[in-house]
Length: 401
Ligand code: ACO
Image (cartoon, rainbow, N blue to C red; front, top):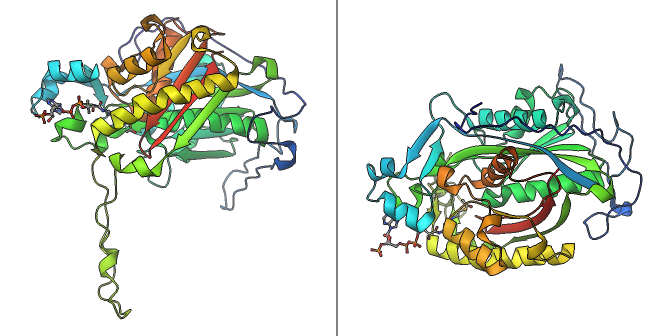
């Protein structure tokens, strides 16, 4: 069976889980303590809108779970495949330069009637199918994206499209290529401290829409995709998020961003306080601006440190981890981090050659392919890390299934 990307998909392992939420205290070392527990109550003030029920007041007993596990994954990519040779027709580059410097050979680009929302929905449906899980039983959808089709947020539209009529809450997380790791940790925090039990984390980005297709320094790197993981509450012994380590540094943000174009509002006010010109002109965002060498240096310095820190918190060493799964930005970054941490090549997951850098989608997309191909099996441990604009970076030690 071929999926949207044309990949061969063996029968999907089903991982139905009947959760038995555990009564108990919060896992130590995390952000929540019993005293800080706050219920999230959602209500709709729109006439005619269906009454949504908060996870803390509804179907499930008001219990706090100690663990959370990853029980389903899915992904989707656009149909249009753009090769290095295709790019060499529009900018001064070559397949050899791109593949040697980055490891990328192809990328997928949203076109025609495709949308990021639909890719996210496809990925989400596959993750729910794998877990044999009814979308209506979701408590929360986290849409990790920096390229929503509506700047005010994409998650509620995905919620609607999935037909989650009882799901009380869906919102976006904007953290570029670190988005999925931050989403995963946020899901765990919601589960461990917020009374949520079933959280869908989607990483989806359409970076091709932000790329300057005349800039050979950036347009060769990016592609579009979506990936999703279902995270469920479980007993502490089954916990699938063993540790994490998260960072941000606004100082380095100047090396990578999509800033708003010159804000004209500075011209509106005269020195004596009088209004010179009103209303302000409409602003727009620029294309991706990146200092590739600085981002490269940042990644190879900070990512191994972050993974080592997460491993330390989990009381583990790299040699005991089954897989290294990094944000897919550049094969040279992946190789440098693997070498630094002494991960052998055969333990490194990489699908960068086929998709390029798909930002928040890259980790769940690679995870999904690795699970469906039988590479990653239930019980396997994975050291994963995201890094990118902000600057933001973070890692998590997870157990699949
Ligand atoms: N084809 C041919 N030549 C090129 C191309 C290209 N596509 N791009 C740049 N060059 C040229 C440059 O002009 C330069 O030429 P010069 O020596 O005559 O001046 C030469 O190649 C070397 O350029 P560098 O920028 O030094 O190349 P580098 O080896 O650093 O590779 C790259 C550039 C691939 C961008 C690399 O720096 C990189 O991958 N950086 C990390 C980017 C990254 O990971 N971004 C993550 C974004 S995550 C997020 O949050 C969105």
